[in-house]
Length: 288
Image 1 (cartoon, one colour):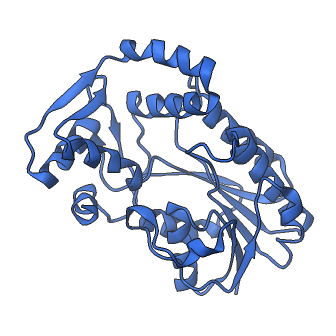
Image 2 (tube, one colour):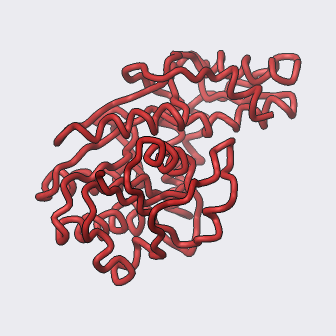
């Protein structure tokens, strides 16, 4: 029985990963900051977390809380990253340094493999922004470490698409540009299954997306259909948002990082090898 440490267990993907690990009879150890969240159902239909074999309380941004956490562990899984401003932590604090702290413990304990959930984006983006840059810095450190790596790069989560539902419910969906750029996002359950299957890989970067390739305009239409709403889409020219980019960069690196990531995803095709069974239309109907 392989022993897996899961960091990010209470997040959208982490919950599905813990469930999949338990279903496949892995010994599962979860790292959490707030153990009370383990018994709570996750957002966006993510499941409550099944009883893990072991629960440890720690914070990856505080290395002293991670001491010996990887002892007797075969694989480390991390989907840790920040999307909302908390405790004044930056992308560098969490996405880079936090994961690096965990990697150092994995190296010290001679862990076999470290699986990290990155993001699928064009590596040649002219302005990736601080969120992506922090993740890329950690990926570089992981590849250079003495622990075998598995880097999974999903196109996007179904949970990210709930914003389309919120806008459609109010009667109007805002799209950046013409809405013709395409993406094949993946459901958390499908992605978790892919991750478990991929533990057999060594020193690989794996790109993965869902079974449907849709334009953002098509996703907006699916959201309107849930509410039987008249389809009202507002297209915002990319050029109109450039002043906002400059202002955010000066005022808040955090919100600028989220903005830059959002703009990159919305204005570039984000398509990876297709996997899974979950369809966006069904997800929208289930979540409403």
